[in-house]
Image (cartoon, rainbow, N blue to C red; front, top):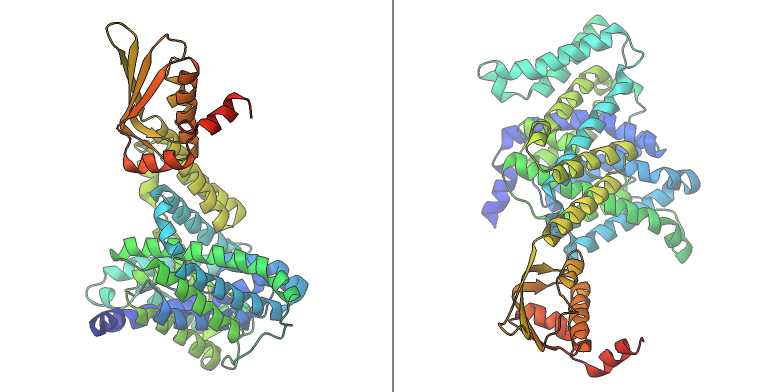
Length: 496
């Protein structure tokens, strides 16, 4: 246990410290922007990012992943803040945390195995597009200095790693932010800076219990928002964890991550912050800057609060163009370019699922809706594909008084019609044998189809024998089937 703890925290100290510093710098303007989206003071987003990052470093199930205030969550808070105010948002944040902890204990993180690779790819591409689109306001109606700074920043980001030795030691995004800030200060360029985003807090967060009445009316107000925040937060966190798993070639505990996100959100709500979740952009920055362990997440949160409270005069000078360059790098690095090349060789259904997920997420800016659409389409395509894997063969005896049917494949709601249509009920037979040794019945629809076949044959005066049914199929057929229950068959034949 001690060895695991040491590996999680101190196996990559230098890389985690440097990566955490880069992430902290990139978190500041985003936390402020997300606060503005939600309609609250910038310090609410900054306090949330600090609390969530520090707490999730200890409680999360995915080392090296960054969690903080996010745009996806902020969009869900707008109406609550507008109609009821900040105190109700803090209460909703606490309830969000409780729901997420419950999700962890109910092992809802295991549901990620039902999310297909094409949905994950669509999710990644959609977020890459949204990250890039979020930078466009900083590049619209600005002077040429902004474009020059952004281009120079991108040049440093991609060229600095090519330098011998030092290029591999110091993260290029950190070098970009420092150099661009020094250039902007030296030349006194009139460009937008972090200080223009909003007022930075000058004190550390303090314990705050939401000032709302503890009654059913309050619960009725915050519960719908908390459910939405919990679902979106867990979805984005689980998807981001899967992506970081792939980038680092390591595994993660999804159910622990659910609980960790809940504990972190409760911590944020008690210290004046709004609900948050994992951030794919910042997590990618962390990984690409060399961050791998829990220390990088902890440092990101700790440095964030230290910088905004004690180094605010310096932080305010950072040009937004430098951070835009970093986020464009993240967007380019996040997008799965292989998915475009693979569209020629992938099945049409896979491409449809991926593209649909991208379109819905980008159109609605709602990750939950996009993932839901992607999972739904993937499920429908899968059911349709498996439904075709059903073969029914038959042969009659020499006198043509008996016929045996052999069923091979899966019988469920998508293939039950094909199963029923394969039998000839008008053929004059004394006996029909249905061999189910290579078939499996999955649901009530398939059991109903079997009932229909047996009862129709018996109605025509044909004896029916079922052979070879496996134990799992027999269990569901015995429980829900009616063909061997005379009283139920009589009801059906009587039209009841």
